[in-house]
Length: 294
Image (tube, rainbow, N blue to C red; front, side, top):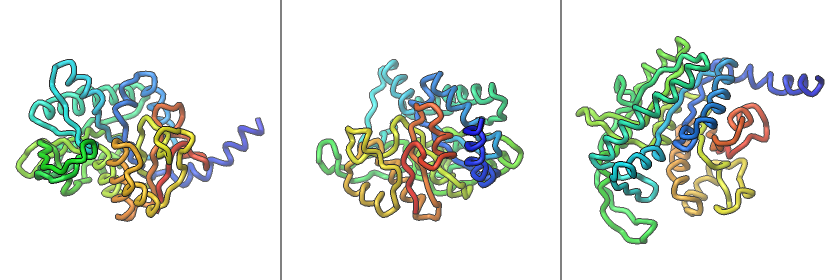
């Protein structure tokens, strides 16, 4: 009994501090593809909402889209961690991101009694973007410099947060698929980590939490025991420049660095596959992943 009372005393100041704050939580495709894992994580999100934290969920779904592409025989190309989105891949993104995945997330949250609302960056011009121009870059796999057309991939111009603010003020939990729209009405595929960062800035969120299938950032890519609990912005910049981490982590780290440069205090990379990792990261001093702070 005393141990439980001590635990309550430890987390009470955090509960008071975070009540009414906005947390932007980005889900990886791996987190949502396993029903048992997603159900457990959804319960953690429910606990946060019950404690008065206002949650905004952002998701992509690259893993599920790759599976559907394989089933349909649609080839996929990824260069330096970024997906090339041709016409067929854009149709897949709309079907999976704004369709099956978004609906699945909503169903689970509704089952827990949360008033979740499904959106994409296209709704009310939430994520206004422009088509990425052809880029000349060095392919890290081949070492060759070449021109790359990423197709229907967008770069964010601005976030229009009015709809999100309206929903949050009325107790709704927005669930946003990682698509955007251009001024011409073009639907664009946009990196989910990038959208999550920009939305966190636009909402002046207290935390940006990126959930993936790793326990944060490792000093040794092949050794989970080398997890880095905390990084300063300068240390994170050095790590990004060295490219000593996996290609899939580079877009996340780049988005976080931009976030910190624009005034957000901290971001968190945690393993969404681990039970209670979200609550451990928020309500314990040791956390569960990697915190990057200014």
